[in-house]
Image: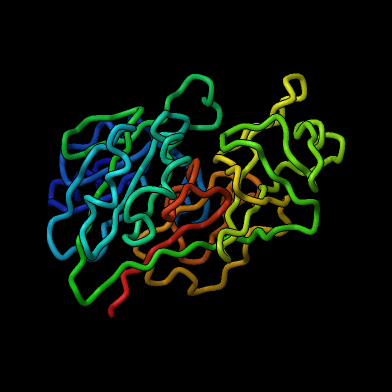
Length: 317
């Protein structure tokens, strides 16, 4: 919708999550909303890039007024402790920031993580402006933007309902060699490939590995992707969009973007998809059934994810 229509919803007191270009979000009035910068969306007519409209998600099912809070690296681990006993937390992190890196590395160890539902996304910028634009998040209650803090809306639900967070991932571990990294991080130089230490950038180039395919680890039955951001042959370094973990075993993925059928996504309260799915899957003008929302620089379903579709439903117990 256009900015005027979004502003009308805010003035009516609705609780919203808004995605859009920074200039558009800055025009919205103060109110019960959080937002993040991104001009790519999966709309009702299909994937599109728009710098004239924003994507608005109405917050589903609150039993009472949700609360909005800003977190930085000093208190980010308190997110689930601040969350309602029954409800969920919507989080937006600015890409490439310290708080983004801190969440990606440490969220698995946050107290009450996986006990209380956390869902959200990583804000970004237009791909033509990666070098000169900074991803932002917005606390609509204060009317202020942040570049190195997370904005969270904690949403309490009535006792008759609960939030169900799910991941749709078309990727599976391939049949290639196992890959382990000596340390956790957003980049790597060496890796143990089938138990042999090698320069990872050299390995990818020599074996002509398709870097559009992520690395995949099996986390207790859930396939979790780590997408490759770039390979620097000169420096012998590979950069990732999410951290690889030293205690995990990876393989290069095999698979494609899932096919969606009519009705898939019906009843979804919130969803987001990955900008890499948008690019590699050539989703401009194509629909992913009834799943709509921002196409992001990272998806959050408890953990930071890549190349997935994340969605949530409010279920009656």
